Image 1 (tube, rainbow, N blue to C red):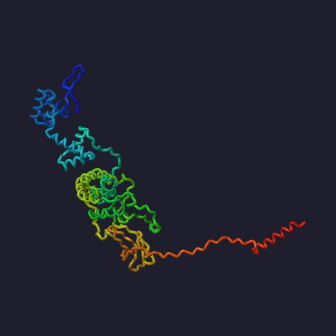
Image 2 (image 1 turned 90 degrees about the vertical axis):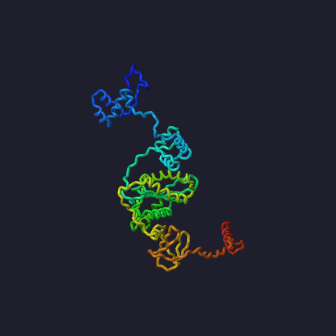
Image 3 (image 1 turned 180 degrees about the horizontal axis):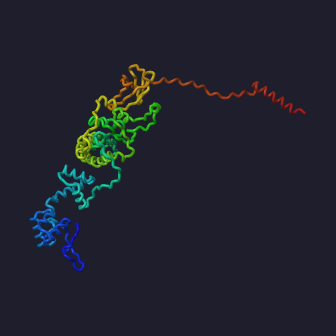
Length: 439
């Protein structure tokens, strides 16, 4: 607020008594009142300029004449507010924040103070209290500049999917991962905890999401090996100009859902910001309830996520919902599985994950398809027709051939001195020596 001199200063000395603090609005009113006092305008004109009644203008003129320029200032200035929060409530809120919610952000802390303890505050009020009491609190970091992307206009047009690896139980329970889904148009969140991020959890979470909301038009994924295959294309794929697909990509293609792979974490910033929020809010909610297992956390999510969506859901630009109706459970089970090819041997057996399976019915197939469903069952098909089979608990042992008979090692034979070969050689040597000795 600007400061205006109340009276002329003498000898360049300025004291607090010589200064009046007033707002710009009050300074403007003071100027108009001076014009009315000096009869340069009527009180009615002054009332019209200030937006007040004639009676209130007369009151202000009377105050200026009796109190001077201070009469235009508001009477409640410098006094405590009549709507101030009692000191005991303030002390209780600060004590609760220091003891229980010290690592919460201010918005989350005020929500818990209101919901759990009945202390209704604004986050800025709590911040000012903490600052005045010199109590440390979490502050927001300055955001980096990113290119803004407009939201999709329809619900179900694009769903971002990712997994968040974090210490969700703060050491109370085993390590786990949160697989999260967020609708790009409305910020509707769905998610579930799993022991790891892999093909099985990804297919199971996709099945649960489809049953609840339907089939989205497209999904936004990163390039994790669960969601994108990095294998080299086979000869058949090269001949048909196809790229190798992961089990998740293959399942999404069969369901008619387009897959978009993000080239960086910033490209799917909506789901990344969701994880940042949940790692702040959800971790502390789990702590307050003492949750320390994946099963308990998933049960809590069924209550927590609807509340979260009611608070943070956005209104889509279009009211249309592009989620398609979900297929039957039988069809979902058939598509959302781990599918592999196996070669049929001459005895109509196949090997899958080290186990031998006997095809009960005769088939002309050289290769069959093995589907490992999410419920753990195994289905073997050929051109869409399911084949009956039975598992062979153990392979028959191979007949071990008898070890070859080893003969004793042969030593080189040295003929004796009186051997005929040696006699003949000795005789030739004597004849040669005699010839050399003759004169």
